[in-house]
Length: 535
Image (cartoon, rainbow, N blue to C red; front, side, top):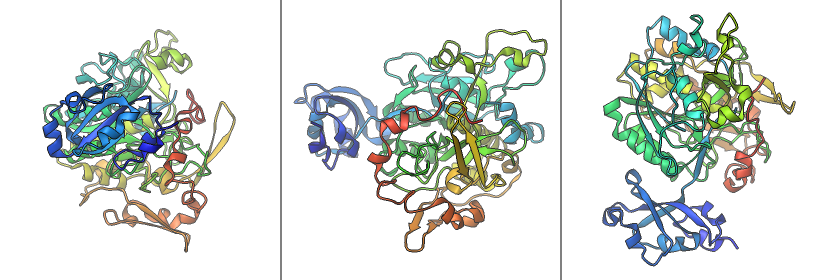
């Protein structure tokens, strides 16, 4: 027996309908503003008749309380006249699997920013919501503040190994990779930036909506103290509802409106053809929110030039489930990226073959304990963009998040091959990808062009919604904010015959049927390689 009978309650999120009545479930309960004030955190007293209820803290920005209850008692809470809505405290995960930033540093234009513009992100605070951070010689004193939001683990150390890798892509100085020379192979995009670390993922790389929301609230509170101008979320989870009602999306919009540029990973489900979508419609939350900058992953194919680069076959494609927002917004290097390793972390222990021999940086061949690891995923692409944002804000500190997004998308490189292929080195399966707007967004991150550009965006930088006309077989964009010619060029809605088809995105089994699209086996199964990227 499932909870379907009371899962249909108008105040209960649809995905609560799959919970068994006797199971404990963690939920986020939103109250009307006055009701939240009256409650004043006294959850147990309010629901004295619910015997097995554990209060887990407040989320003031959403007028919400987090609690654990038996699923059968959810209707008692939902029937409270002060309650607006009840969501499950959904699980979030890292958006990577188990790279060289030297090529990425050049390909993205970060080298030009450093040499021609003398920019390194100095003075800009970048909040990293991830698995914590380990001590590493490439970070020195870059971490200005760190806090833990994982209930069962008390420190900010990186037991998983993901957050340290992300931090290195943003602000690593590459010192350990130049111990025997001046190559700085593993340097980050903005090595002068300051890091504000919020641990929201545990040692297995798993977290929750409430942990992420609490971290977002604290980042907003600390914004002025640490000049937090950028927030990186290399994490994601399945889209369960419209971004308009999703608590995680509402929280990141609060950060955006507070003046923080939010950058998030697109997800790694681009190979997922479980329901005949060819990987379209697989953007994860909170990357489905139209305000934030959602980033897909590129493969540099081991060269410094952009024109031969190709989309990573696993990079999730838009439009977003439920709302059909055009995503991703940008793509950046994310395949086989060398960055910092957290020693003894789960990733380092599980994938020792991904650890980079220190002899790579030593002409004499001497080796030692590895300080670096190679990982792939949109988790690696997002911090490339976060680093770029730090450079842009160092140069023009008065830019708003909307203006930053406009500038990066407007100046993105669009000269990519129309179609590419990639072969999984484990399975031997070849995947084909198109450079359409639901795969590469506005284009490839080009930091040098963004820094050289002087245009100023006007208005709110919401990514547009795509609408499919079945009678004509064409797609149009809600371009009230963004001009299609400016942001997308002629390869966007005009190429609808290539990227659209009723069987692909607009059939009965596609994005509206979120329960079909987003099963846990689909999102977090072993359909994508864990340790290797595209070749």
